[in-house]
Image 1: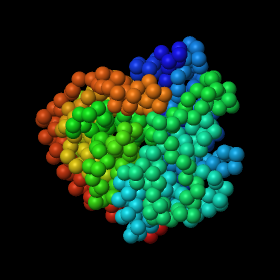
Image 2 (image 1 turned 90 degrees about the vertical axis):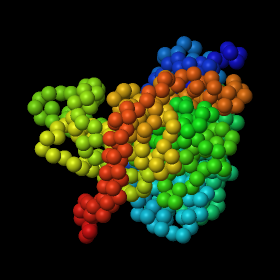
Image 3 (image 1 turned 180 degrees about the vertical axis):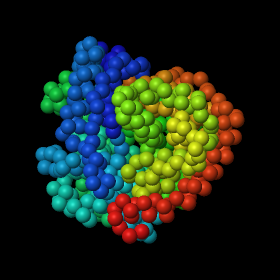
Image 4 (image 1 turned 90 degrees about the horizontal axis):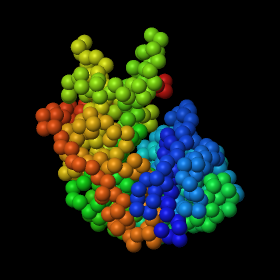
Length: 522
C-alpha cells in the first residue's frame, strides 16, 4: 500500500448512468455506485444535458460509493474520470455553464456536416485526424453554433466534453485529453491540435475555446477543497483526466494486450468496434469514416468504427412487446422482457430476415455517415412472428459489427466483447458467427471505470507504465475462447451480402422519408 492508500476510484459518466467504482491497486473491483443519467430530446434532432445536474449526479455517485467502502476518503490514492465522448459542453465566466450541453446524440449539425464534408479542405482534416466528420462531434457542433447560434460562442470561454466538465468541477482546471483533442481538432500522430484541422472546420476565430491538453497518465491535479466537501474525499487527492470512454472501456476489456489480430467491440447502447495499431501503421480509409482514437500507450492508436445504435435497437423491439402486453392489461418491465430473449432466439430461424439497426434519430455514423439513415426490416412473410423479428434485430447487430470491421480491413482473428450483449450467450454466439471469429469476454464488470483507474495507477507510480498495468489488470481476467458455429457463420456470410446490397440501395429512400417527415419536397 502507498502510505495506507490502497484504493483507486474510476468515474465513468455514460449516457444512461454515471458510475463511481473502487478498485484496489491490483485491479480488483471492490464496490460500485451509480446514479441514473438523464438527457432531453427536442425538435430538430436536439439532445441536451444539463451541466450542473451532471456534476451533482457525479457527486452523488461518489457519495454513494463512500457509503459502501469503509474509510474511503483516507484510503483513496487517486481518482480518474472518463465519460461519454463527442458533444459540446460550453463554460463561460467563472466556469458557469453556457446553456445545456449538446451531447453526442444531437443531430442538429447535420447540414453543417454535409457542407463541411463537401469542402476540399476536409481531405486534409481527415488525413490529420483519421476521423470522419459526423453530427456527434464537437467540431461539427461548434461550426453549426457559429453559423446559427453565435451568441452561445460569444458567451463561452471554453468548449469541453463531459469528462472535461467533471474534471473542471473536481480540480478547477480547464483541460481535455489527447484522444478527444486529436480526433476532433488535431493529429493523432502528434497528439496535439492542428491548425489545418481547425481551419477546415471554419473555427480559427474560435480556437481560444479549445482547452489545454492533459495526459492523465503523466499529469494529475489535486482535488479542490470545494469538490472534496461535495464528494466526501480528501482535498489534494490526485485526479487523473482519462481518455474518452470508448477507448477506456476497450482498454479495460482487452483491446491491447500485445496479441495479434485482436478486435474489441462494445455492444451497448451504441456499438463501438476497434483494433489497436501503431500510429505509423494506421490506414486512413477512402470513405472518410470512423475514428482514430489514441490509447494511453506511447505510439499506439485504436482504429475505430462506431454504430450510432446497438442495443438501443433491442430496447425498441422489446418495447413493442411491452406496449402490446400493456394493451391487454399485462405489465412486463424491461428486465422481464430481456429474460425472454434467449427463448425467443431459440424459437427462430437464423438468417431469415435482414434488419438494418439504424434506429437512432441521428442516423448512422459507421461505417458510413448519413443523418437520414433509419432502421429497416426486409423479407417479412405471413409466417414470421415476433421471435423472427427479434432474431433479425439481434442479427442486425452482428451484421453491423461485421460491416464496421470490414471497413477497417480484415476480420479479427479474435473478438473481445464487452457491453450489455456480452452477458447473453445467445447474443455472443450470433455476433461471433456474424464476424466469423471466436469471442472472449473479460470478467471485468466495469471496464470503462477500470480503464480510467488504470491511467491514475500509472500516473501515481503504482505501475511503471501502462503495459505493466495491463498485464496485471486486464490479461488475467480474459475468459475462455468461444468458437463460432460454422453453420451459422456460413449463413451469416450469405446474409451479409443481402445486408450490404440493401443498405447501399436505401439512401434515396431515406432522403425521401426525411423530406416527408419535414414536409419538404422530395
